Image (cartoon, chains in turn red, purple):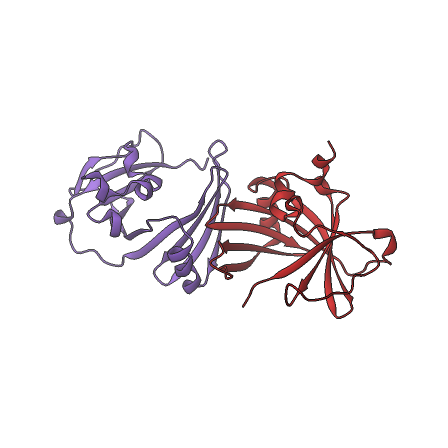
Length: 156
Length: 156
């Protein structure tokens, strides 16, 4: 089963040590049709075009192609739906789990979230000291919603 | 100036000799958003993913990537908007012009059109004997409309 079970938390950056080896990610969508999502992602100096189908049960068709960096940047700039999601992702190992920490910029400046993948819904995890409240089920933090209603607009 | 000036005609296939070296083309769209069209095209044994922006004056951003044939066929089958446009294209030289002849199948079975590109709107061309009436300005023959309202439905 390819079902992903993830929990998402806010982060107290001041309690975290120095972060290293982050990957800068800029991504946006050419299409968010329900049948076929088309995403452009630049990750450091590599760029990718990704096509994802809709979920059929727990599976989802996905195709990814590496494309030239300058062309991806031109698509992000001129063809994609705005705003572009811009963040640095850090991978942090804590108690046998990999935690994916995202520090956002641009329209989502100020937002820092971390995700951890579990093997089952009732798996017990030991939370790092720098984790704040859980936001797994808060739809505002979904990637698709961070594009339509970015973090900066929440405070208005 | 990259402006394309094309004229489109119906064709009397019986007056044409044997056609050779055609390219079988199957294509459909992952997205037809006005800002970014995403097309999957299989041409003989090659496959391409093409992203086109909207026209800005006479220019239009376009990016094309070759992708694996089996993945393109899976996208045409499972992710693209239906029906898939299915045709064989032949290139015919006549009086110093290249005429692109398309014989359609599937939902557009029975339709045969030919297009010729001109260097100016008032350029005089010598029509081949196998050309019937001009349909350049008939919107039913636009590729986008052949997908939404295929030829077979015209006769109902």
